[in-house]
Amino acid sequence: MDENRRLRLGVNIDHVATIRNARGGDHPDPLRAAQVAAAAGADGITAHLREDRRHIGDRDIARLREEIELPLNFEMAATAEMVSIAVRHRPHAACIVPERREERTTEGGIDAAGRLDQLRPTVDALAEAGIRVSLFIEPDVRQLEAAVALGAPVVELHTGRYCEAYASGPDAFGAELRRLKEATTTGAELGLEVHAGHGLSFDTVAGVARLPEIRELNIGHFLIGEAIFGGLADAVRTMRDLMDRARAGVGA
Ligand code: PXP
Image 1 (cartoon, rainbow, N blue to C red):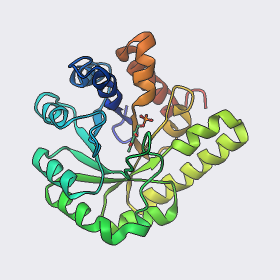
Image 2 (spheres, rainbow, N blue to C red; image 1 turned 30 degrees about the horizontal axis):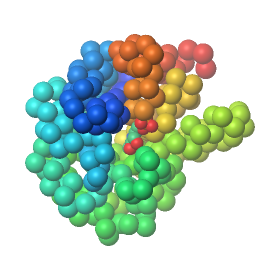
Image 3 (cartoon, protein in one colour; image 1 turned 45 degrees about the vertical axis):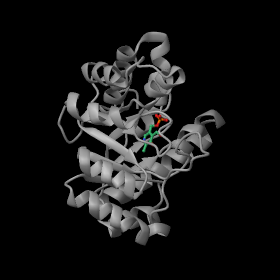
Image 4 (cartoon, rainbow, N blue to C red; image 1 turned 90 degrees about the vertical axis):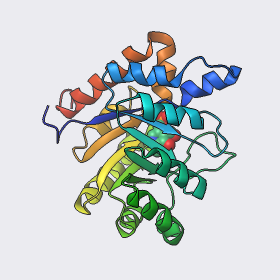
């Protein structure tokens, strides 16, 4: 497939570390998951080093950089500690996410529009280190404009509301997909590279995969959950196939 049309798949391996940490040992190893995902068609590996280290740890990031050839998308909060870790490891990309200790997962996008001054030093420091900066935002024009104002080349649109709407039926799901579609078109017009992710599953991936301006999807929880039943390689292959078919217009 033409490189400009191919939709990249970043596999988020955080929850392999969640399971490992439940027993405090070495198994299952997130690095092995990254290797399996790579062999099954992933284009990148995503890992979120949270401030509380609840899943991925510092050593995982070091090993991912040393031993995995796929580009690493390092998800991080905009803190001095995370900036210094990112600058030390120089991942291919850093995605700035909001982080609250009490949340179960990253529940919404970062308010870039409301935190311009606070985010600017983080974006600048990462860019200076040659790291491609992405902002995890809601599909909202104010947030897209804020990404431009900050000089971030990439945005990742939070697909949480879209995925939650799936259970509410086609009207609600369609409305959320339109919101994503408008944001991807606007983002591309503003010169941003647009990615998307959060909560995507076999049921919800095709709608976003069909949006031509989206260049990358980052998917974790569903793939790791699905791996329990059919193995990680199969889960990644099936997701890859659903993305490619949607992109090629099959079943549209
Ligand atoms: N993208 C970003 C920026 C994330 O923070 C996460 C995980 O919260 C994901 C994608 C993957 O989401 P999920 O694990 O629900 O697929």
